Image (cartoon, helix red, strand yellow):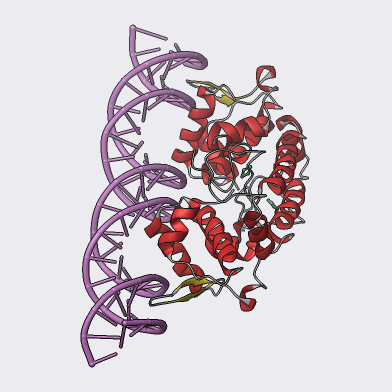
Length: 145
Length: 145
DNA sequence: ATATTAAAGGATATTTTTGTCCTTATTATA
DNA sequence: TATAATAAGGACAAAAATATCCTTTAATAT
Ligand code: FES
Ligand code: FES
């Protein structure tokens, strides 16, 4: 469903949100450790997300990645589109040159239903809410077993 | 959602079902042309599906790929698992080492809902039914525009 | 029997994804 | 102003997915 880059990205950004709840900026190394992802690769993904304004960053000592009010408008969906592109939501899922209502592929009708639920999954809760659920221990971003 | 191999595989197998409705075996070349997929790559995928018994094949003149009663038990889900593996249905979709109910990732609950609908999409109709819908012109396996 | 046809198998090439490493630019602090 | 810390950028490496081609095997038809 998601590429590895996207999985790392989602986990990282929720971690950044979690730390930003307490006004902490976090470095790529700390992020990678806490979400159990390869550090240099994760750093590249975060770089890209900064370029796309989904998160913020600051160089130098006390620097790192962070989010604030300006980032609250972004959802997991934006994140997924930023990394994996819109393929999960647009285009024919059987690879035909376009998704067409008048000339549908065999999966088209069901795909629409599934896409509705994927969209719900990625927009129902804000990234801040997801971070709070991690903070409270309700959910986890890594499992070291 | 699906790899290219899987997209080609789905389109090809539905085409094979469609032709088998009229007891026609079909060659890799004909299949690839009708579903608009690269021929040698498609042939490889079909080879693999024959190994996994999802479809049948015969060598020699009048040979080709086909399906019969013995294949009616297979659904799109089996096809997808045969090509892409079970990742769409099993394991943590955020890439944690396992999918866990007691230690869930932030998406776990919603992922379960989405998976239910994906499963429905891939099992609600038989491959034969999907082939009949193509036969009747209700749906299409390729669009050359 | 022989020729022909089509799938099976294996080797190889290309592209994309995943991952690493090193240098440069920017910022904070002493 | 010098130093240290950190992100940014670019080059490179490895692995996986995508795609092609050639040889071998099996079946049919003549
Ligand atoms: S035409 Fe294939 S998903 Fe819409
Ligand atoms: S724990 Fe991540 S999907 Fe279940």
